Amino acid sequence: MKGKIFIVGIGPGAREHISLRALEALEEADIIIGYKTYTRLVAGFVDKKKIISSGMRQELARCREALQLLHDGKQVALISGGDPGIYGMAGIMLELIEREKADVEVEMIPGITSCIAAAAILGAPIMNDFAVVSLSDLLTDWELIKTRLECAARGDFVVCIYNPRSKTRTTQIEQAREILLGYRDKATPVGIVRNAMRDDQSRIITTLEKMLSHPIDMTTTIIIGNSKTLVAHDRMMTPRGYIL
Image 1 (cartoon, helix red, strand yellow):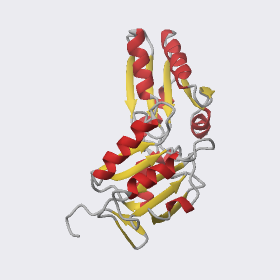
Image 2: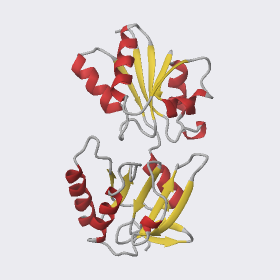
Image 3: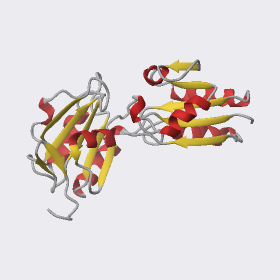
Image 4: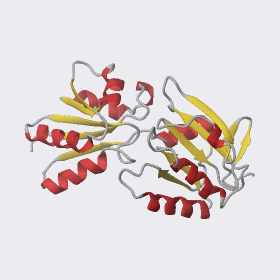
């Protein structure tokens, strides 16, 4: 193939939170492909590019279209919110390339994922070992997700939760909280960040006991502290052991 694919993490989506190399890749690409929310975010700072957008649960279709364009010799930027290798488009694209035995030039460009963005907004809650767990059971069995949560809780990891609650999936976050309460104090600090580093961002620091009394949806990232996490000057902090 003559084409090249850039798999680009656009982070939260604002230009100031996108790496210089990601911006360069968007400029070098002939065509940009992505979920419609993300293509809208980048449309304002790419000049006269062809943009192909599609909706939720069309990830594989986007990758197939990108591969076809590579056959045509195009340079394609496949964009992903956050980082493409963390619940993003990278794995799907690479699996498809492998299955099709396509000889493709690929450049992976990392981005700020919501766990990192939320942590910065909250203070320094992931200064020590942490686990990231998605509560979406569309592709992973819920019983396995519960096992992973229990292992993270037992190991005293700070836990970052993605996809905590949707319109149809409302009880998983309640079960996750109960699992964590089995291993840590109800006063454990919890940070709830909605729309991290976007215009309608909100931030709440609460406790494991009270976390469910606050708004939680699919734009929310939740960071649950470990046994050492504390709150000081309205910031969450997990000491590494240098001073405290």
